[in-house]
Image (cartoon, rainbow, N blue to C red):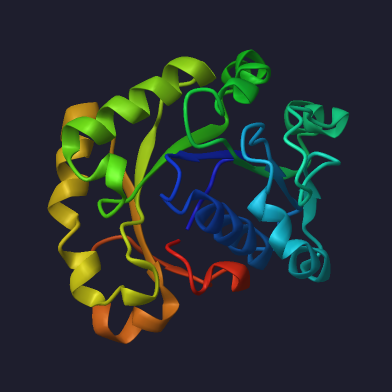
Length: 224
């Protein structure tokens, strides 16, 4: 799958955006690209991307995140290294953005330079099975708020509808109409439907533009 130099991954809490962001980084690395993943979530003090720091290091993927990542300190600080996202054009960057309009504010600092370069995707990660995004209208409302706060419009949708460990092939298939309705309203394409790699055989030939996910170890028993 082809990705732009900068891939911005946004979605509401529980959409699974962090796991999607990690897998995009893995995919880019497998293509032989120089890759960094940046966790720019200034709202969530747990920074779950850092849960995979050892795996990322082993794969040669740089992690950019706050010095307070993984602590219990809710300090809205971002590292200076984040400016490499727009300044270092020799590398591909995957950005994991906060799960609401406030979380997307960090993106606003980089938005003018990202738009000027025009080598990015802004992916809206959606999950039909989360309480605040169960229907089309509520999901679109959340995504519009993120767009406004971040200063960059979404370019495509990632359908990551799942129920954690309870997800089966029907869970994924039953979400396709939901994703299409959001795509139609927002007038942007569905980049892919993501699913746990363990469902590959069951979903073979049943969905278009499927994207297999290697599950982040810390999320295997959670909705992700």
